[in-house]
Amino acid sequence: MKNLMRSGIFLAVLALGSAGAYAHHSAAQFDFTHQITIQGTVKSFHVTNPHTAAVIEVTDAKGTRDVEYEGHSASNFYRAGYTKDAVKFGDHVSILIAPRRDGKDGGFISAFTTASGQTIGFGGLSPSTGKAEEKAPGAATKP
Amino acid sequence: MAHKYAFPLALAALVCTAAWAAEPPARPDFTGIWTSYVPPGPRPPRTAGGGFRGPGATLPYTPEGKSRLEDYRKLLGPENANPAAYCVDYGMPSMMENAGGYPIEFIQKPDQLTIIYEVEGEMRRVYMGDRKIPPEKRIPTRQGYSVGHWEGSTLVAETTDLEDGIDQSSHPHGEDAKIVERFSLGTDEKGTKVLSYEMTLTDPAFYTEPVKTQKKWMPLVNGYIITYRCPDEFWLALLDARRAQLKAGKPADAKMSDVYKAYEAKE
Image 1: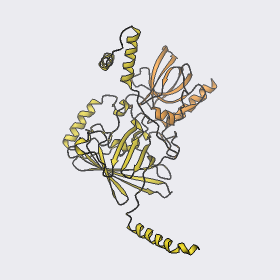
Image 2: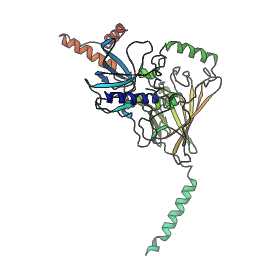
Image 3: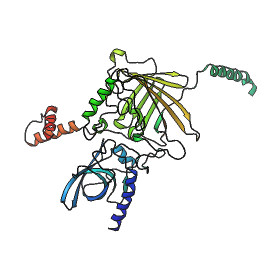
Image 4: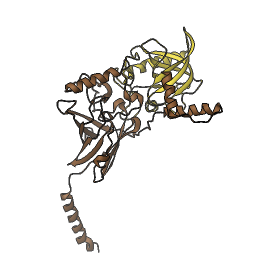
């Protein structure tokens, strides 16, 4: 539990770095100013272009159900530190999402912690390393 | 013994010197993986998308350009739909903006500069030698057809044969647009290689005057391009449909039109 809380805090910090990560998805669709952390079991996790698609089984006050989330492109996932099969069917993951503005289930993945404890966030690409870096709030990165 | 070669060596040196004197200015090699330039020192506030224009910039649209753009924007709906989110390549000039911060690759040969943007593996060829596609064979595309020539150490590329570019993120244009780009190489005060770029878009249907913009790239250290492909959704859907047919003991003869119909039914 302590670990989960810690990862939640880490994800919240990463959220600052991905405030503008919605250029393919307009701010009208997802609320990047009120991101939340969800936890659940991976039903599917397709890291693909132009956007990643994930189905996570979540449980909350509304009950247990499968929820679809969208994410950055495969290029951005791999540059941010993702490796092949880092997230698999049945894994328990913690995901920071920008929720849908219409209040329905779903959202855009801003950062996540894998079952092995690796945290991956999308804060733009460092010009010197080509890897993800922290960016100022408002800086834009297209998924 | 050694001085036996002195005269021929001196002659060779003289010939080389004469050849150098007659040489045109050195042509830079743009080959490499590039990313948007970040000047040394504290980072300035970034503008949205890292593109050509800062927020609030306006362009000198003609009434026709403005009305076509307004009509197009009505189609984008509440989610402000973006062609790149539907695996449509950016086209010119947007592909040169590094939208989203993806790297861009330049491969230079004497007679051709090839430019590849990571997203969609979008590619341009700038023909610089005698080998050109005849005008009547140039099928209009989103990237257009580019011919390059050197002005000193600056490469000038002229692009025509463009498809309608109403959906270009920074510089929407019509199919008669002409784009002139200037590429040159230098270094900044830290010694970082800088590829400087200027673009002028001329399109009397859309703009009352030529529209200019510029940007800079720097090498992406140890950089590489990650293959970017979208799943071949309709093909995979066709295979699914045929799998279902085989399972039902029927011949696998579903057509693409069946797949499209299935999609239409879903919507």
